[in-house]
Length: 329
Image 1 (tube, rainbow, N blue to C red):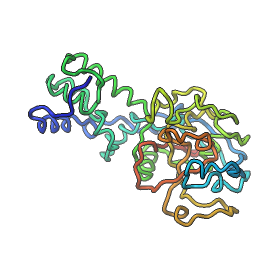
Image 2: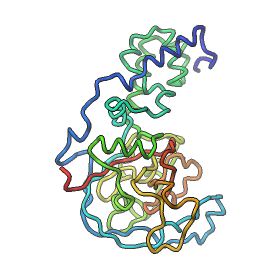
Image 3: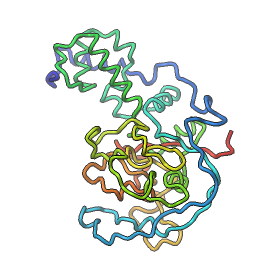
Image 4: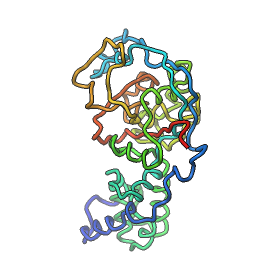
């Protein structure tokens, strides 16, 4: 078991120490990703030009909105289904990770996601190594939330566990960022947020499939927020090897919802309109998030499913991935 939540003597000094260990604005920044992979990026996949099926004509014939108490009707904002033509574009193979976003925070001196200051991710490894044992034990309990008896754990083991925890967090999708922060990251990386149509084509391909892997729902193929391994937390990007779109993009169903460029508006020709949500007040999010928990219905992870959030909101299950024009070198 971990130590009590009661802070040790001199807790204020220890708190200030933890703040001094913060990593995000002090390390030498690596070059932006665009400088490393300008021609044929191996961290992106190509979505070729051509038609795809956007939206759906489904209706909630079984009354799931009432059954689950959903605020937004199922399917209606996906109407009407249409065939659209898109030029070729690149899209990130994976959701942007904490490690990638940390490089942006360090380079541009922008605010880090709040959660990083609460879970030990923003603490510099070299400064942890220089910290005394009593302080390490407090940090391991209060920030890393290690499920061990830290009073009986030595310095080397504490450091090993905390650094391993940071390395695991490196691989998780960054969440808790606003639409504006996601947009700024993509521009810094020499990319942009995908349009809603681009995101949907990248997820479902040209054949109009329901999910990135096909038409049959399988909760074991995605992090739905109701998985034994993660609970309501994020999984490492690309962990689910069969959660792969026709073009090779991972996690386009589940794990984190993803910001896209568009405002949440009705599709042209739609007969559905809700004034309090539509318009230039909410941005679209796509993919279904791990925070769905026991509401992890297959409907939320369909490639045509549209969600929305205020662009200045920060949500623990909303992240993003970037895109780029195919002729952008």
